[in-house]
Image (tube, rainbow, N blue to C red; front, side, top):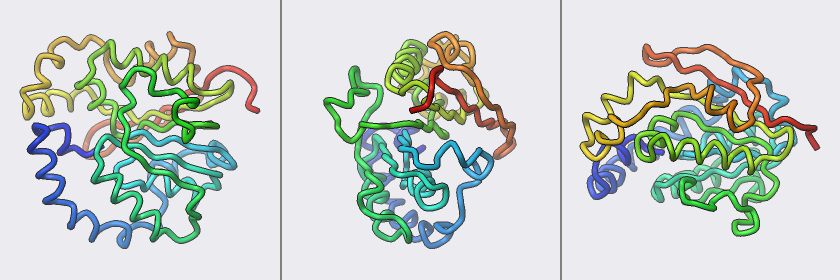
Length: 235
């Protein structure tokens, strides 16, 4: 999910995204398309081999494309609330070497809508084994509050099969205040928040078990990777 689309008003966000789109297209995929995303490089590759991945907040699609291109995923689905970023992701998919059209699917969606995780209503969600939440929990939390995050975690647990994996890169709570200061629409929700990243208590409460925690920093902030698994036997 684009930072602009969350920090600004909706109308401003569309304008900003359109204004910056050309620069974005110039710098990706040519600059780093062939390099595996650094976060993925830290994870056990067997998490992705012959698996189907759902990347929430896919931005321009790099995570989804990388798991297919570099890590042996059978298929990847990337979703984002920003339609312009989905356009970019689809363009990047056309340019990505070693990726067939049937292996990736990008579309606009809002996972916070009730009933969204329903493979019968949305066939493109069928067979998902792994879900990634990279650099997006702050925005989901600020826009939807504690109750929204609890619903999301519960929905993800119900959605994934036994043995399914959720990989979370939570943003530090220290970053929230800056985002709320820039967007007055987020301030009331920000003041009401009681949950804190990395949401370990809440994820355990819905049933996930923590399998791996990888410590890392980015931009001077702690940005760990947490691998959660739904109990049960992997099919």
